[in-house]
Length: 276
Image 1 (cartoon, rainbow, N blue to C red):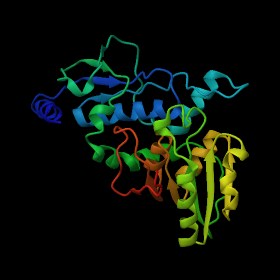
Image 2 (image 1 turned 30 degrees about the horizontal axis):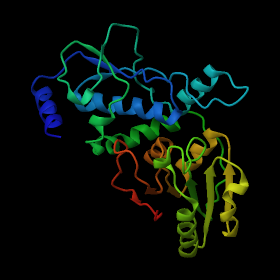
Image 3 (image 1 turned 90 degrees about the vertical axis):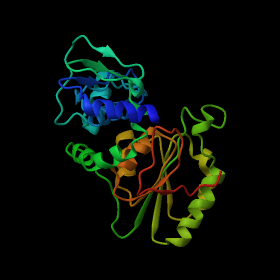
Image 4 (image 1 turned 60 degrees about the horizontal axis):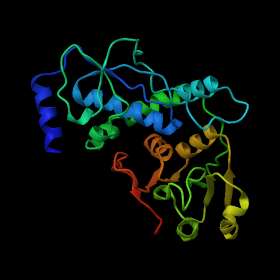
């Protein structure tokens, strides 16, 4: 942290005038690719650089019978992070492999796959950008949702698919921890309507059959899923960049389930309801 502070102070006295940075993050999931670009945009703001936007590249988890370019372009326009930003043009750039450990020069073009390790130390940068991020997100077309204003709409995101008790287990949340939390939530807020968003088969979530006013949304359209997470009155986050982005955009109550340090908790987020 001392080194980060020193670098920030040095660049305050010797700003990197005329320098730019972009993020050509390699192919990954939509949430991960967007978070990488967002961290770079915030890094630019913190370090006095001009951010140049590189659109998302070959987003993974492509559904069958969907063209790769169409899939990637759909995510780019859905998040709309590049709204109002200049696009990065092909040029000779210096690759920042450790953006958190560099003194930035003037009139230099940089690129980084992400800037998480630096920006995570400044959660206020995410907080300050949230309204701008919301504006960009809501400036493009979104799926229609059937949320009732008469109900307390609760969205629960459970990471599955490439996550299980044996695979990527650090991102796994067991159902036995979720069930009592939802049961308590229904007792305390009887007007709640709970929607659980995940992947798998109904039999994998049979535990939730005992809960009233609770519906499963499995393997659903990811754009609709994400918008549900954003627009819910209450969001129970997963250990996921997808959840992190939705919570940044949300104006509802968000319960933070911590995982990687470079996805910092926002000041208005509440504690996780699960006890694992």
